[in-house]
Image (cartoon, rainbow, N blue to C red; front, side, top):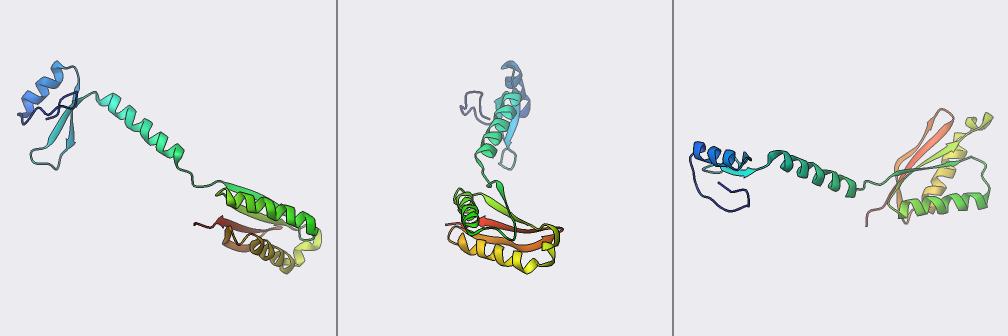
Length: 153
């Protein structure tokens, strides 16, 4: 048995341990059921659960899977505009974010998906030093979608 301050009390019968916990106005919690004999601790169980949830929230807050950023292009984008978009995608990937690149076809442009696929491949090559293609270009309605993920170093 472990006391409320973390001190070792020793092996006690269950009734005596429960009596001590009630005298301290705290709960008797089994912390190591597989041990022989099982280890119990006198503690405020509500506070313990609250602190555990707080630690879990803090750990979840620090965990960063990387956001999903978006970039839209058109098939007949100018060279300078392409460079600007490629630089933005490069920065997103360098920051550890995934990037969903959508190539937006207008009017009859959708009849020429090879133009879009070539452009997306060119973008993937432009950012190849910091990112890799996670899902290859695929046509979804009037958009051609490709997802880039940052390279792990």
